[in-house]
Amino acid sequence: GGTFWMAYSDLLRRFEHIDVCKARRGWSDFSVEGRTIPLSSGSSGDVLCKSIVSATLTAKSTEVSAMILQRTKRGKAHTSSDRRYWYQSMGLLVFGPYASSNCGTSTTQPWQLAGAIFSGAKRDTSPLDLILGPGKYFFVTLNFGSSALAHPFALRVTSSAPVDQIKILDSAH
Image (cartoon, rainbow, N blue to C red; front, top):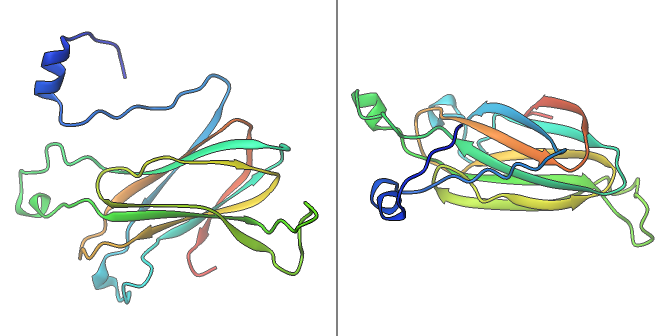
């Protein structure tokens, strides 16, 4: 990162897109690196996720922003394998404790979908912004691409309160 200045007309001429980072003072954050599973790995293509991340929130109400970032294509035209690098269509599901109608937590229905976001084949998903109560949450990354190559990505989560017990689980769980 850094700071620089340029004319707006130069900005429009030289940049295809600009990534803007939500950086808030006092917020917590974590990133988890992952790889999409190539179709050649024997997967049927139903759900191609390498891992599931669990995170525990203890604050009464926590604002959370989550997104998936893929490696940039910049400088990827040097070899024939680099030219085959395409962004994957990615998705993110967040599951959390089932909230019953009396604002408590149910033990008979332990998980519900708290939020989801899907994107076409581009470098990043739009942020998934949620307000979550205390409890354990699962962040599940999905790949809907049809590539025979594994692609690196990062799950990036920022939150208004500290996140405890971040664990990477095997996708078989």
